Length: 318
Image (cartoon, rainbow, N blue to C red; front, side, top):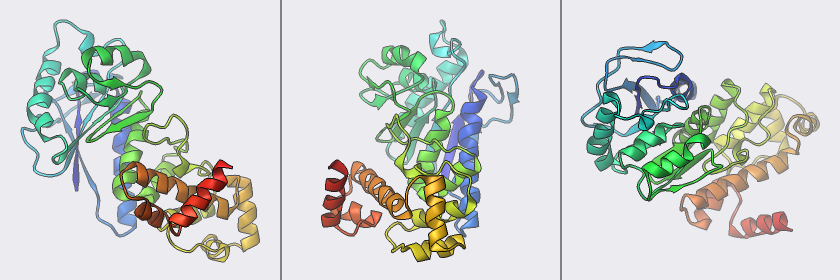
């Protein structure tokens, strides 16, 4: 189980906290429905025992900033309302200075060695101020890109990115991008089927992936609310390398093959076969970006081999 350590400071944007936290809670719920153990333990910490959020509601019973980490941990830094970020204030507030010191002393030495860092919105400013983004590719809310570059002059600050991953550090843009960030993390740890199920529960259909300013191919054709089609698509995501003839898909949906083809055309905008091929290509491309060999990537995606992979790529580029 991974510890998710949300760092809560005064004026924390409540949606920066609640959105990702709900994604992870629902991921645990989906895992349990599949007979799997929960993957995440949510913790809320801060330099003070309570903090008033951006909407005035107080978040209480916060744990102290942990001095050490006894299991795999993701540290999550959250944003503050635009114009009130503590990084812009002089002198620096005590809670900011204390958290910056903790990041530099307790988190930085463990990055990539059991600890990962996730930032939502202007949470990247705190990471930069603590030196955790030096030399890394990163992003933040578009209004704060200049300030992020000032705080991390050696970083490669990227605009027009929903989220950027650089080793054990993932940074995201504003507010609702935290939900995309959490869904991306859930897909990586729990599988894309679990991430897709969480997105459906939250009615978040326009999820985008790492460094992708457009819609994620892994959720293309998932904007509908048809439960039978989602059941079919979830099954394919769970085992993309399996053989999926139309008759097998139709049995999952409890409809005839002809009716399933009509449903896909109406709600997905493609045939079942075309949707599965698009999904497999997206999975293979992601595996390649993550460093897997071509043979392994295409096999995991269900493309049948490197020859079929070359044919698909040639057909798509034609």
